[in-house]
Image (tube, rainbow, N blue to C red):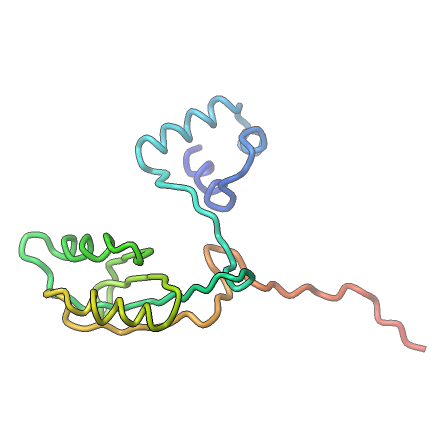
Length: 160
């Protein structure tokens, strides 16, 4: 039942407990207790809202930064990843396979601000060998949600 609860919560963290209980053939108290247990165990780490910032007056730039580093003896990539994720601009840090070691996702107000972070803070870390920065120009799909989904014209074509 845990995996089913997680699947529903991942798609809609605001789902009503009563509705979730009905969908899973259980009762609200059981579902609520299971969710509380998973929160306590840190299986559920948080709840987030997906926002299309392009539809607001707020300026936000998202950048994906590939980082090649020298791993620390006895700690691997963990200590450098921790140094990076502690910066408030950093949204996510992932250990990845391929030519680079880490993928850093960060947000800023301008391209200049993000570029400054990369050159002044990230690139100056002693274990960072190189970086490659990619700016997100448009989001098509994020966390399973399609942005600007096209509405089909359901009207019937009438000709004389």
